[in-house]
Amino acid sequence: MTSLIRKRKKVTMFRRRPIGPGRRPVNRAKVLLMQAHRLFDEGQYLRSALLFEKLAQGALERKLPRAPFLFLQAGKAYVYAGQNDRGLAPTWAGLKELAAQNRWLELERLGNKTVAELSERGLSEASESIRKWLDEQLAGVKSQLPTGEKTSERPLLPTKCPSCGGRIDPQTVNWLDGVTVECLYCGSAVRAEN
Image (cartoon, rainbow, N blue to C red; front, side, top):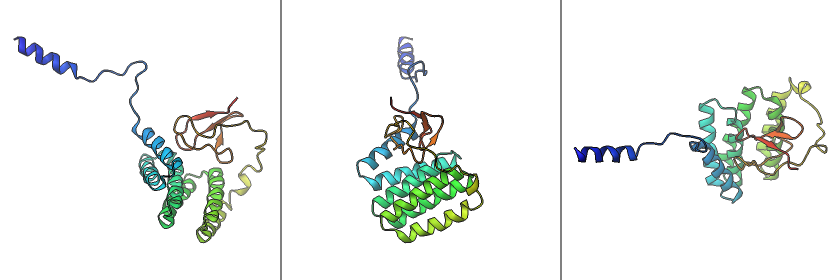
């Protein structure tokens, strides 16, 4: 009888404790996202690209709104790693997903940024191909897009998202209000620095 009680105590000792105040489950995707951004910042572009692509595929399968941005970042990381051909596939996937979701403002902003970055990296043929495609996609909606937002009056933003480590670019993020933007990669609200 005593050994049975001891066995029960051992079993209950290893039961999973309920999550209570101050204890949250680890979000594996968020951990991988933070790791991907860290690797990119450290110049480990290929490892970063693989993680971003994995996250993008997962987000696409789950129909999450962050998938296009993760694909674009994967493409950028591949290009930075010197794997230009491999980088163009996720770049196109990200842009086409934005178009499929009718996210025209984001497509215009990130498409133009992508065109400029590819041109700077010497990929003028890919850059021109994306430019022509963007013009076709945005032709019917160009008049509906806001023009010339005053960025000089915007408050100073942190350079990185405190939640996932992603870069915050005031030219490409969505402003939620006068002092808050939405992180493209994790969707967290990021407030301007005081």
